[in-house]
Length: 275
Image 1 (cartoon, rainbow, N blue to C red):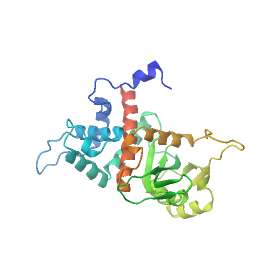
Image 2 (cartoon, rainbow, N blue to C red; image 1 turned 180 degrees about the vertical axis):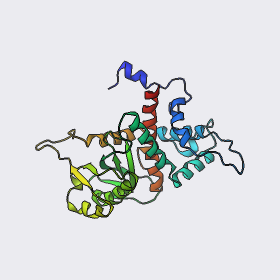
Image 3 (cartoon, rainbow, N blue to C red; image 1 turned 90 degrees about the horizontal axis):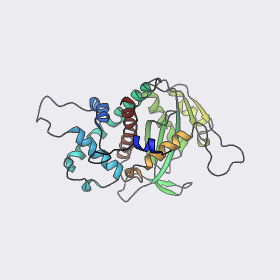
Image 4 (tube, rainbow, N blue to C red; image 1 turned 180 degrees about the horizontal axis):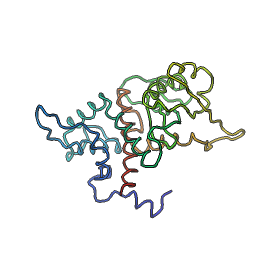
């Protein structure tokens, strides 16, 4: 809840743009970015400014061509963004930042339980894979995520919206097991119920899936134990205008923006703890 005290804690005055990194936030991610190459032309672009430009795009949702001129050239920022997407730097950085934040909270770096859910979002005219979610009446894609019990994103799978959640959960959880082998318990809603999902996952080790049911007779919105954290994570995404829709032609690009949104959230939290 916003109060005069909490609002002051989140004020970002004195910066060029509210999306720019503070010194404390930059110190958290700088060690994980690529170092300068020993050969070739020396780097003349500030990686901090590149990340600031990417965060500006994330928060404002503006097209690449509308990037303000006080950032590095648009082509330069794009080159770094797509290179880091293709070599999965965003995914690896997300993992390390999540682990650091959990340790700062005196928790185990690797979670043992997670929460799974998906969000259907409309796509635009840029093309790419898409499908119709008849239940939500949305033509586009699904953002399928697994979070820890605090709502921090552990892994992401973006896929056409016509693929059922229980089917898409198989490659998502298989990927998650490779990253977090100690994570064995998943909280989920009723669309993941039944033995078929566990049968498909038996080759990658033991899983326990706990279905969180709605209370009998309750209609409309209900705050469900454990599952509310993943719904809150989707709400966090909604505050980043680049994620208001799926504007991307490739699913991998949308995945990268989700990781960036999670990284931004965590480093802002962590920077406040280290002040």
